[in-house]
Length: 385
Image (cartoon, rainbow, N blue to C red; front, side, top):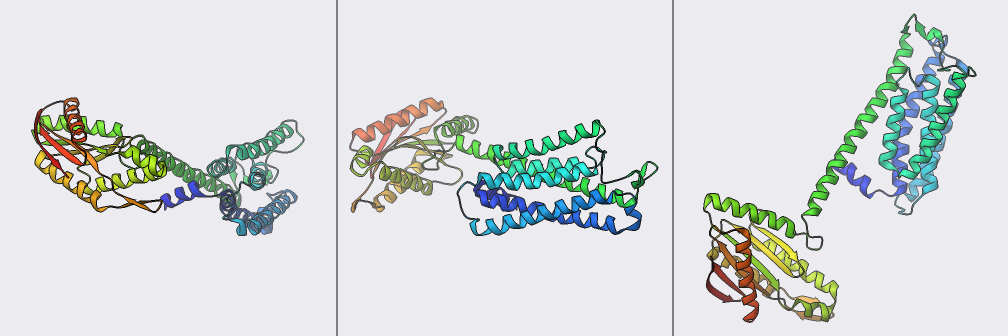
């Protein structure tokens, strides 16, 4: 559920975000409206309320709810419209912010949980809208709070004008005032807690994405050179402890420049993507690691694999490429690769890389479309695909 919500936040257009804000806030309007109405109609609660002020708040809630319904009517047919709607976003946020600010002012900002609700509204806004929109709403609402506090301190208006001293029995609140105050408080806590969980979840997701991006080749989706080198050093160290075989393959697409020159870089990118997919299909997942080192050069790390077993992997790669026909501009062509394979026997990662690179160079020098294998520094055999 959380992943779906995070996906919605990533993909939602401005209209959808406005709709979500309206749908999230409107139920609370009606909750406050009915609680206030119950107090206005209850003879016990009436004596603790300044009824004119509460009726004014009821009118404000009604007007805001009507505006929200109007926003929904206008936005619903446009919910898939990708165009920005800065004016409407500001109108929605200010409408929501003002009504919650009025609730806080009328009930007492510092003696009820209304301030928690305001923080929750701000958290939702920051999650849904851009910073410019939220700055406008924040300045309008905070300006109203500051202005009201100035009037309270100068004695022009009372603090918490919706209630009187009769809302309390001594220092304890009347039951109905305690219920109203608790509802406001728990609404605020629930909203803030939920938004914090969502925000931290999104932060974790961003960290995971950044971590993946730092180790992933953008074009092919394979691990990049950085990840491959980390794994190579780790596997070489493990092989030093376990004495298990380890093979390394370096792969180069033959005459790849001709593909780009003849068919363009878009086709070239497609060829590299297909090659990456075939490499991934030819190795054990997740034990083996196929990676793109850069350009048309790839590598495959084969832990616990002898050079004889690596030969079978090379044959699979050559065979799958031979069976795959590329199409471009009405023409069909095939791609071949040259492969250099080295089996590690206690050497460092740099030594194994150099040996595999020498074998790759020789495969290209001797006609391409072939694999050359070696164990340690002795050249064992060459195989033409």
